[in-house]
Image (cartoon, rainbow, N blue to C red; front, side, top):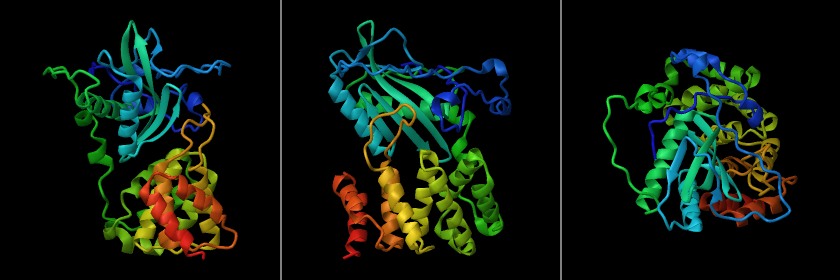
Length: 352
């Protein structure tokens, strides 16, 4: 696999994935010193109309090799590779949805996120696993695919390549050090009024402002900042629960809000009222139940959301009369995650 290819510079927070693919972000290019001639649209996943004949599961013949493509060793079995890819994804808390030979996934890391399509293909009798960026951070996809490559190499599905030193090789993590710049924990006591700005952004900002604010908040609900956050708890909760209602189909927003609420619960910053309990239960159900695959909503379940909301309900909530206990019992019974099972079971037990 070649890692010297330059990833596509492109981003969009638009909830409609395939419309977002048509919107170049010139301002971001200017910020890193590139002009509009550098713009290249990401590869749009080919939408195939559903056939009456059942699709064969395995490597799909194709003629086009993607930017992110890993050649697999001869004799590699599809099911064995597929299982290792799914194991890698779940181990790294990546939300995903499988559809025949394709896996759609959203990968979150600090203040970055990327949505991708993984597919298993065969080009001129050579088997590959390929990744296409749907939207989000191309550099993060590069990091993700490199880690996946190492995982498959270590498990004997791909040949290990010796890295060649070159003065012209670019290290994207060094050139664009997002984590050092954006994910640093803030000492809110130095400027506590910034929390008020967060509240305003969450209520009045557009989706980009909201996402950026949530990303910063996620890493800063810490023990050191609890005392600063306490006076703003009511205002913050009002904003966060409003987002659960207004952005219920946006995984990036729902996942961030869920993680923040779990942190609030952990530090004892809140006690949920009946309306809030019902809202969290509805959100949990929405992101737990398997649904028919749809290109308009690629990721329909999230184990990370399930874990965070189950913990929040258990730590800060009490069951109420309007709560559909049977739905929560079904989620707990069907979940393969211990955190979801234990927290929901403990929460439900207080109702009897």
